[in-house]
Image (cartoon, rainbow, N blue to C red; front, side, top):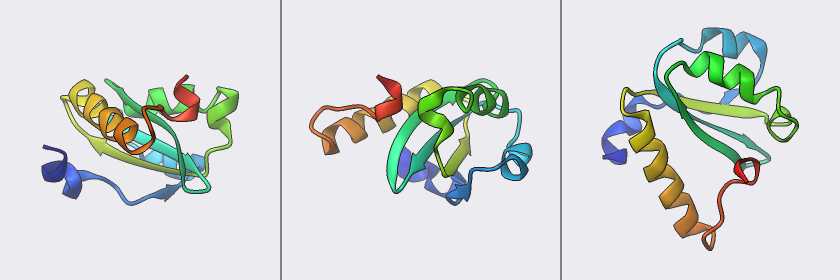
Length: 98
């Protein structure tokens, strides 16, 4: 299922207010990273609002890039992404999710 969504994902975009202002207020999944290290994988009914709230947290405020995908089944996709992440990182979750 993730493979089918690959074409829906945005490119990795610079994490700044101009980019965030263009993110839709729709359900979806997003990821944030710094120095090629995933900090957060999250899903929300309103991506733009959720991203703005996440950026207020100290851990995520240093993120430099963001990627998102509009998806009504955001919880299912988020859980799949987290499961895949844990398999590749010895059972650990992204550092800003602990």
